[in-house]
Image (cartoon, rainbow, N blue to C red; front, top):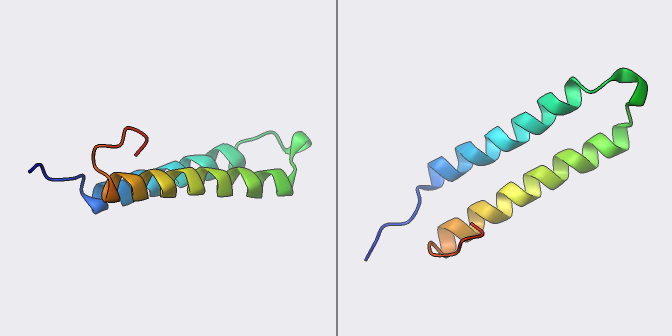
Length: 65
C-alpha cells in the first residue's frame, strides 16, 4: 500500500495559493479596484485549494486532488 500525500504539504500549498491571490489583489491597479470582486476571487482560490487538499488526503489516487 502506498502512502498518501502529507497533509502539511497540502496545507502549505493551500496557504501559498491564498497568499498568491492576496498579493495579486494588492498589486492590482487602484483605478479598477472592486472590493467585492477581490473577496470573491480570494474565496474562490481558497475553496479550490481546500477541495483539492481534501481530495488528495481522502482519495490519494484522484488526479483532481
